[in-house]
Length: 254
Length: 218
Image (tube, rainbow over all chains, first blue to last red):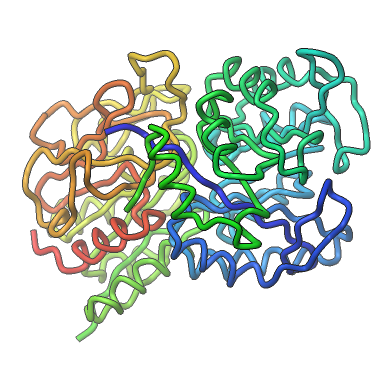
């Protein structure tokens, strides 16, 4: 009886449709998020993640509708992020049916928001999404706005700080690797996972199933997130789980 | 005849998903049930089965429950007095304890004597919250676990919590899980039961457990 490693397919959602940006630039339409969520539920995904990249606030309603319809159809945990800046944003997502909410830029610009969110809704539903790039050997810094804006903030110290403020989980994305299919930035993942007491989700750069294994075995992540390898049918969730189990990782196979 | 199931709404997060899970389990098992998400004590009083969900911190949940006029008294009356089948989920289960020790000491309902305390894994590498899928170790036979395979090769339940109920009476613990030591996963005493995990998020195991609850005759 031990906690299993989680596989989390991530759907980038824009104006209510699934997209996957390569390095967050070239967007390819890949379908209806609710249908995709149902398929992943049936395939045995351990959680689902929606990241909303809708630019305009006017279209935020479409995301809430997607979350509501997903929560009605899928009996599995759902994390939603993107554009979460106010307590009201979190409340709206949780009421629509999200189990956890990922805070990204707002955690960088206003750390107290993390504390406020954790105190209001509980640590367990506050995920801080950390987008980082390597700036020198062994040093990673936080970038915002899809990797365009440098902040100069050191990623590991930032991770420790948001956990002390109440983040219950960290979603760590390498902006160097995202969309490259060459594997997670294992140094980044491990540096943060070893520095904090909460679970870390590895993200950004998965190209094959060995990358998922490495995220846990070498990156010390508690969960692995991937998008394109699943969305475009390169691998199924079942294949990923079987491969990870063969590598000696504890997986949920039921 | 359709039975009435009340899922108590006291401002603790989204209950739509839980309601849908109960509706689906009822439909698939052919158990005619009307699911009410409600803060109305009259609906709770008339319900055949009662579900108390809960997410967030213990003290907040207790405050929320107390803020619904007459709800705690109604629960005492119909669950403790009249013996209606009751299921607490996550913090809804923790509220059954005597006290919660998260941030501050808060009185629970005291139906399952014990304290809700921080999980302290023996292995420092283990993360808190205990977040994700884990198996159950059954301590006793129980109708709620009928048809659910337990043990290391059994089905998985979805947990997300940092605190757990340490029951004073070992016989109240129906199932344990493990996170660097035993962690209470299910409690049951008479018509009162609770799950630390989220059956409404636990796919196969969850739907089966909800189905069992819908036909449970304690």
